[in-house]
Image 1 (tube, rainbow, N blue to C red):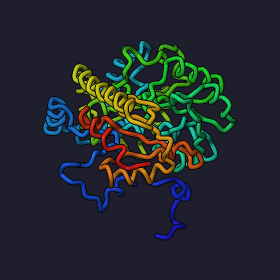
Image 2 (image 1 turned 90 degrees about the vertical axis):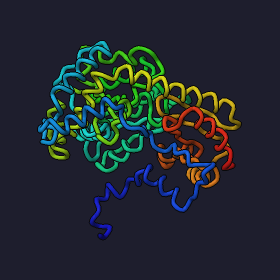
Image 3 (image 1 turned 90 degrees about the horizontal axis):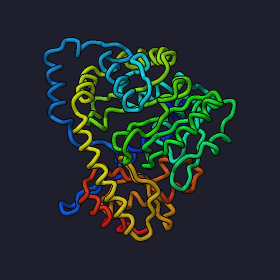
Image 4 (image 1 turned 60 degrees about the vertical axis):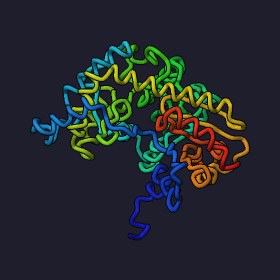
Length: 393
């Protein structure tokens, strides 16, 4: 294959960061008394609970429809359950025909964005940004406009307003945030909704990690706005709450008119979402609320361990911590990719440098790192605190 046969938009974006970081493990031996601590990817390492697995197994054996094409927008039973539970959780009104099920949350983002923006358009992403969002925009020739966040990694609507141009189609927020871990205040999200509505652009709020928010009660009031569907688009993933990463089940909630356009994208790309995964997600929604509460408690314990550990670690500063992630920096580190690779060899720790989440011309990324701490228990976090200083800045 010659280079001129590759879509130049693909050539302009970067290699998948998780895959790149795995290359750093090549040729490195980890002794039995110091096994690798992998903090690169935010994904549950255990399978779903047994009841959910049995529900999938039973459907696999007894439901012929589970092996056939299904509705493009997802199983009606799952869409209806989502609409009911989301309406109750957020205190608003979400209808079944405003819900679409997708092959994971990344596909939900791509499908929604395909209906919003094309070559030459702009989308505002707070930085540090989620790299897959940036990659999709690059590959579709949409310009990602970086919105620097404040010291607490919370974006400011007024600062975003100054970046909006006639080419702007949307602002994308993630809360709790990936990669920063920050939990956005309800008033911040409301400010962004008001801004986007006043400028006639979409507000996309990715709440993949909402089940692990440290705050009690609903995280925002956006769905209580009777006209939310004219501006708001909500994204979610079942991967984390029910450990369904391999089954690829996510969703988007948006206006009925937009989902008509989303249907075109999904019918072309996937035809329908994974049937067995949807059956598992539906069973989880109906049966696992208490189990998910236990998962949340464990994640919050790990969050506390991270906050405590970094408060005692010389030189390191915690910028944000929540859900699956901590985002940290060290003032004496000037080349975070080199430090991260050295830490693999010298400390047996794999994490991602901030340069994977920031524009190339943003120097902050060269001092920063994302730690996906949900992959290790409290004892593992204590071990991380011992190993981080092994690769000296």
